[in-house]
Image (cartoon, rainbow, N blue to C red):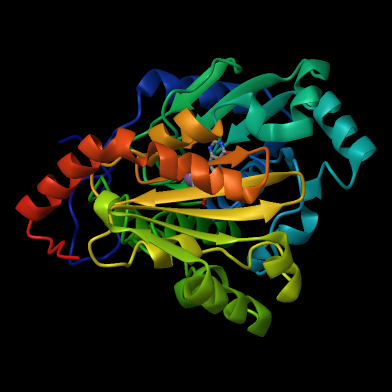
Length: 371
Ligand code: 5GP
Ligand code: MN
């Protein structure tokens, strides 16, 4: 197996990561960076730890290379990421329309992180037509659309941040990677893998974690701020949801947890408050897939998770105009939340065969799926 740097001497630090990226892509990206001076980094709407971690992480590296780099997001990033260095420097396009448009227009390089369909930029997608910047996609979702000059797309990566790390390491930039960049990159890996419990396809991801921790990254702080800490209202809202708004469909090994706009108002819902709720539903013994539905203004946000080979990205694409990964996907429904629930329930039988297949495979692996 080819490695960036071979051997681990006394566990003194030596970076051992498998060389998974195509050399030609790494070279092309390095070339684009070398030729640019004003870079805009952007991500999907309702950004998560991976979207913000990858854009801010790259921003710090690009700045250390002397570039003017700015992160422009379609909307406001969640407060749970406010601990990240660079958070206050982010420009949400929904709030600073003119400024964000000017930044994109003047950029000579536009880097799209953690999304692969332009639609996920929401209103910000308009700005793509107004710039002559070279465009790069750095992403880990299946089925990318062609909307950039260079597409660095690796769906087998746990996170865009893992991909960003590998890219920077392959460019020889690990040694000078600033502490701030390492912190942001580590955040995306931790949030997308739920602290290395899901999606850890490549075992050398653990070496990457070692490499990041060697930079002094505050892992405990990252975990606390992104996956653990909640306001009292949020904690009560989640408890209420599991207590009063959880429906279990045993024959389909499925569950739905939902919150209406009145529920959200009652517990003074703020963005990010229901992060993790869908994963809690997946802790139910015997359940293979779950959906969380939230009645947001204008649409119902659907978020799904699964175990094993059950493809929730398929379900979200079929029923909710969405997509994502096999075990973590999302979409939207335009209509009352009751109809969104009915839609999924009505289609559960369509997915019984795939559910059964996933359940059989899990049993083979030793999982106890008794209901
Ligand atoms: P979450 O459930 O945490 O919002 O999202 C889980 C995964 O599904 C993420 O990888 C995200 O990119 C994807 N995803 C979430 N919402 C949507 C959506 O509306 N459309 C598409 N295509 N993907 C989504
Ligand atoms: Mn991601």
